[in-house]
Image (tube, rainbow, N blue to C red):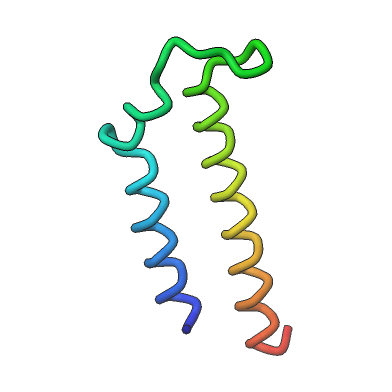
Length: 66
């Protein structure tokens, strides 16, 4: 998969993870280790976005020979 296609797919997936129907799943009055479930969900999605985009940038650089 080319880098532009990979970034477009990542954008679509991560956008889907942050729209209201999926945000309503962890939006419950539940605490996990004293932290609200929604906050943990948002942090996990954010960390996943950063990790996948860093990997995609590394992969794009490796394919270019940089």
